[in-house]
Length: 270
Image (cartoon, rainbow, N blue to C red; front, side, top):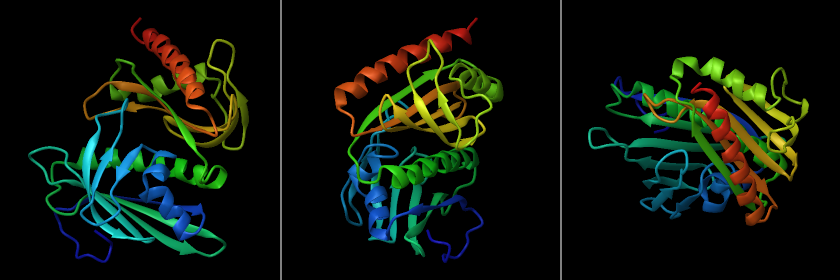
């Protein structure tokens, strides 16, 4: 599904790319191995060969997904296909790694349907938005924590509000966290009554903030407000990747964050 393929008028694709630090081999380890994949996006079981089986563990954001590796050319190209339903061809996700000078690489993700993608525009657009946010986490991981062991802190709570209210809901979420008005590079600390978190803003875009934490430990926290599926209500979502952190500490922090988000969601019902 590379750009060299003949275009198909029925194709529905999104393309995102980002420059990251590291050699092609280091970047490949982050995107095409189970431990690397888990360190910045979802845990995954990956059989390292074309035709290999792959399982993507997305809970609590969605159901686990079985996929098939459809291209395996280390360290340049990794592709897998994920079934999305009986009435559509599998959704394809292709990673392309290209070396760039100065010890950096460009990572491109092409996602969608190479053929017969009509009527699936919203799904492809949503998947593209997800990869756009995830690639920012990949860059921060390779910049600050590459190769370090990781523990997960994941939470997603429905706000019961339609997607059209995303701007207002995001404002409430970020105001409660003390993130209003902060830009990349700014330091922050959560206010009283909020789970303890302090560090630096890595990235900000509408409805999305990536934080590099130093307290309570070294971590990346991707905080967002968007629906988890087409037609679903808005959710407040937290993807935390805690580095050099014991699993029991991550589980304790996860319970604290889930309780806080549940309390916040109740304010949208009033």
